[in-house]
Image (cartoon, rainbow, N blue to C red; front, side, top):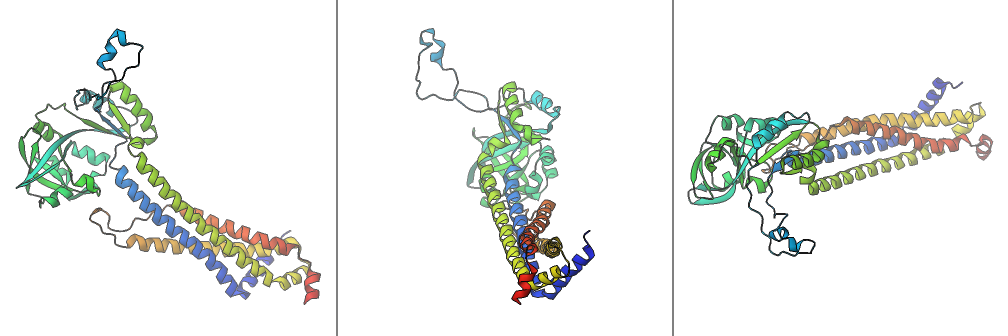
Length: 420
C-alpha cells in the first residue's frame, strides 16, 4: 500500500532543498499560464468588440424588395422562340415598388412566430441634408425607436440625446455624427432635409448617432417611421424594410428562405449579410488560439527540461531511496508528486497573474472618436480560459514529470553508488 504521507514528505524535502530549481520550474508554469490568460482574454475581447460593432447592427433576417431584372423577358412569351437559346442584351431592372406588399400583416405574422423575438418596420428614404449652403446626400431611416432599442444596440450608439426624445417629437431626428460634424450642428439645432422631388422639411436634432462605422455615420440618420412617411407623402402601411431578431440565430438561414417564398420578398440572413466579415473574424480567432497554444507548448517544454534536470541532480537521492527499500514505483511517485505540486502552484499563480494583467488592460483608457461608447480596452473574462489554463498546467507538468520519473524508476541504485 502506498504511504502518501511519506512520499509527499520526501517530495516536499526535495523541493525545498533545491529552491532555485523549484522556483525556476514554478515560474516557468506561472508565466506560461499567465501569458496565455492575458493574451487570450485580450484578443478574444477585442474580436468580440469588433464582431459586436458590425453584427449588432445587422438584423438576424432582413426583408426588403430587391430591384432585379425580370426572369421572364418578352421574347419568352412567343411560342416560336420556345425551346431555342435566346440572348437578350442590356436587360433593364423591372419596374417595381420599394415598399413591402402587405407589410403590416407580415409584421403581425412575424410577431406571433415562436422563434421571433421581435420584428421592426423601417422606411429608408434617399434625401439631401441642407444647412445653409451645405447640401449633403444621405439616407433617412424611419423606425419604431423604442422597438429598435429593445432589439438592437442603437441606444449604445446615441452619444447625445435619448431615444425617448425622438419618440416624443414627431419632427425630431437622430443625426449621424459625421453629418453633424460636417455641418457644424448640435442637439437643439434644426436641419432641413430635401427629398429627391425637391420637397423640403425642417427637423429638430434631438440626438447624435454614432455607430463607429464612418460610412454609416456620414450619411445616415434616424427619425420616427411616421415622420418619413409624411415626408414622402405615403400611407401608414408604407414600409420598405423589416428587420427580424430571433431567439435562436441558428434558424436564421432556413427561416429566411421560407419567408422569401412565402411573402415573395428578398430575405437576407445574418450569415449571408456578413459572410466576408465572419471569415475575417474566424481567421483572427484562429491566430489568437494558435499563438495561445504555442505559448502553452513552449511553457510545457520548459517545465520538462527543468524537471528533467531536477531528477538528474537527484540521482544519489534516488539510489538511497531504493537502497532503503523504496520500490521503483515509489520513487516515480515522489518525483511525480513534485511535478504536480509545481504544476498546481505555478498554475494558480499563473491564473492570478493573468487575471491581474487582464484587469490592468481592462482599466487602460481607450479613447477613439470612432467608438465613443468604449472607454477602455475590451477584455473577455471567460471562465473557460481559466479552466483550460489550470488544466494545461496540471497536464503538462504531469507529462513533464512522468517521462523523467519513469527513467528514475528504472535506475539501478548499485551503479549509482559504485560511481560515487
